[in-house]
Amino acid sequence: MDLLTWIGPQSAGDSPTVRRHRFHQSWYRAFVLGLPPGTGPQEHATSVYGNMLRAEDAASGSNFLTDEIHQIAERRIAEDGTIEPFRCRHNMLSSQPMCFNLIGPLQFRPSLAAAFVQAAIGRDVEVESHVSASRTRRAILVTAPDLTLRSATAR
Image 1: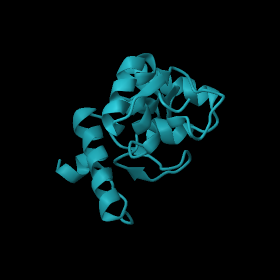
Image 2: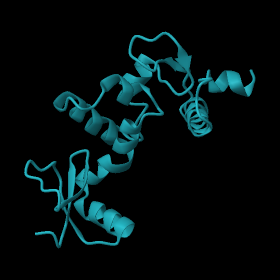
Image 3: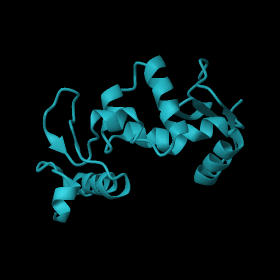
């Protein structure tokens, strides 16, 4: 079997940047996860793409790096109408699972979250391990899955 058969179908209409990222996600699905491609990009679509996961692979959390991150995402999908379930679970090219994979685990590690953001922006922050209901434009720097970071000097 040749490489492109393993990688799976790509989208002919992609820009060069999206084409490269779709190919990379397709490669990861095929060679790291060892999974066949799924359909998408919408729930009832029948087109197969290399960056899409099949229903059973999406349900088992294959779009997330760890079981912990998968559980964080599932909890937010159940609680929050802003997360698109199919896209988050099935589309490896989507920014939603990427955000959960990158930032989700920090909600249980506030000191690591603060160090991460301080290193990134060079500014002291305070961390809460839930999304705050009282937000001010001046105080909030970043809001992520169940994590709020505030400037330590913006009180």
